[in-house]
Image 1 (tube, one colour):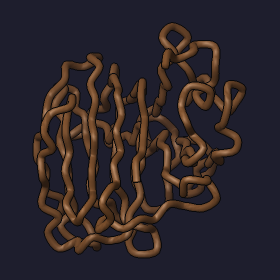
Image 2 (cartoon, helix red, strand yellow; image 1 turned 60 degrees about the horizontal axis):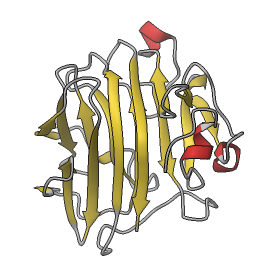
Image 3 (cartoon, helix red, strand yellow; image 1 turned 45 degrees about the vertical axis):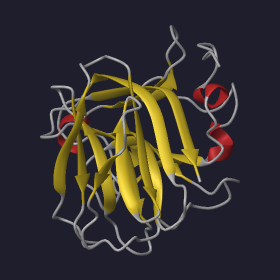
Image 4 (cartoon, one colour; image 1 turned 180 degrees about the vertical axis):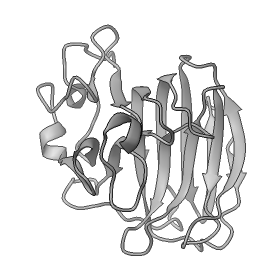
Length: 235
């Protein structure tokens, strides 16, 4: 389906099962936009951080930098700013929390990253996060760097702080590419541009209840920008 440059992101993408976390608000309490406000062609958008590209209809997600460089706001458990979608249950009524033992848990997207941040691995464009009642840490994060490298960081434990980083692909900065992250049948994998899934060790995580996130989670000091052309979750 062609993207409509005249519609808000909710008119081009099914955002009925996502909340949006923004880099604005008060310290430790960033603004969150609910799924009901994101829905539809006249749904929420903000011309500085979350909007439809007026040329090709892509969903544009921007972050001005870090709290020190971009005067942005972080969540309580992070030092980094984000414009990022957080998965909800299929009806949008509550926060998603699914079992990695299930037969299908997949996040797929087609993106360009015209402006990765200057962090050591770059901007996080997709992640699986452990259920917030269990841990404040992710299972894994997919990074995109200023060199176009795609790197998956996987936490070794639920306490975090011991990520293992694996290069899983490369796409020139500004070039369109796709990714799919799976955490199903107790196995974590990622594929780039439709390639075969690359399996990744989950160490001592022991398949915690989890949820997907997608967007622009800045890891550096410079501004970052991510454009989405497709975004889907399957369970």
